[in-house]
Image (cartoon, rainbow, N blue to C red; front, side):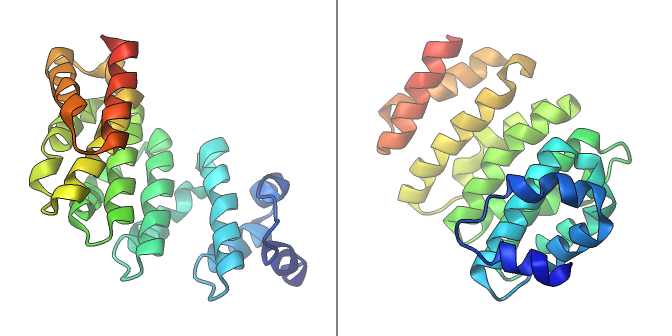
Length: 209
């Protein structure tokens, strides 16, 4: 079975949805996918991640027992591994009945300071999802997002990442108590040097103002 899966996952035109149901039902397939996250073959590693990401969205309880494995990826020197951990853990927060996020929250947030802009942006966007799934963290995450510019030194990166901040706010805006404060922040981004941030802010205000 392993070789059949590997043959499929190594194809660039592989469709992740085709393996989701099988992986949910079969522990062997799921184990192969977990191993695939650290494969040296780009296509195999990427496709393994895409299947697991879909599982974390569709049936997060299937991957919850592997929480620690994904948490360890946050500490990897490989930024791609970090992104995998960031995205899948955010989805697992939806069913985090054991409050495992509490143990790694600081490490998770600290990746906003990562040298890789991809890693930093992924954290910011997924903090919005975490706030949506865990409303008790809404205020704390809102404060973190509004302070992102003090965590990012490079000006261009700072302006770009604010687009992700606005996107994150849109994921849980209805849960935010101090909405006027957030609206004021977003209005300020209409003057951003980043076209993407200006566009994101404009769309946000049209929807929520």
